[in-house]
Image (cartoon, rainbow, N blue to C red; front, top):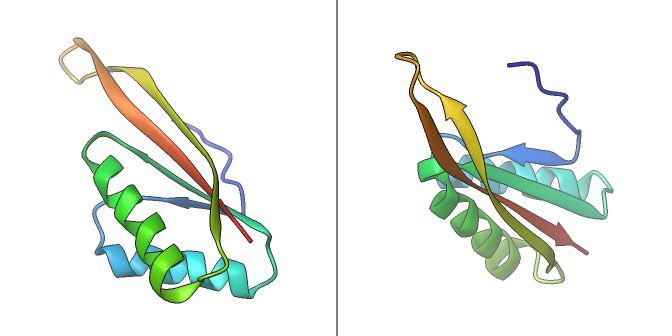
Length: 93
């Protein structure tokens, strides 16, 4: 799957939450006004944690500008089609 990665986007995976929080803080300190936190599947709850920790502990003037939720259809290795939840949280200064 080929995906164009926006420079203001943090994609959430299996790393510790603080790694993604540091990425968000770094983006804000580099001068961007908005950071998009994207996740899908089991990482959705981790994305919420990243947004809340970033907002409450490290960047107190950050606000949640938008939250988009959705579902993606994914074809597994054995050919089955499954639905996976997605979330996109946009933090802004």
